[in-house]
Image (cartoon, rainbow, N blue to C red):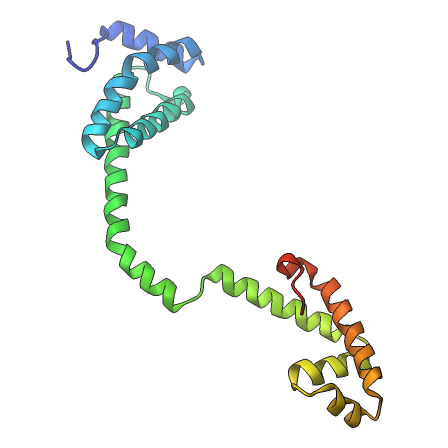
Length: 193
């Protein structure tokens, strides 16, 4: 007998496994109650965190249930559970070491380069803006570009186009309203253009 949990006779193991393979939830409950605590103790000894150990064992139990139909009929639930738990704990430890080693590199790279998601979002916004500006009526678009792209004042635009400042203001107002409506999905909290 093991100190970790009561050892079931080989025949009981096979019977339990066969019931589990036939989707018997009471067999799964019996396996869970019998082996959960010893598996958590083993995982905790490896990963030094009770919460992580419990999470790993829960994942193993879930995987046992998912794979129940494919378990070898002459196998042992105990052997499967302990080996799976050991493997998951080792994977957790390996992953932790990789994260520790790569964290400084990831931090440096994220400072140097914007995220791919950020670049994609920026490209989408630029394309939407260009499309929205191109869809403006000719005079409206002309006034908007002279003001926002070329940086001209309304008086300068009026003089170049041979119109009044009021006409420029009206065209600019129309352009901004139209762009605000068309670009609403990309604008946080309705920020103005």
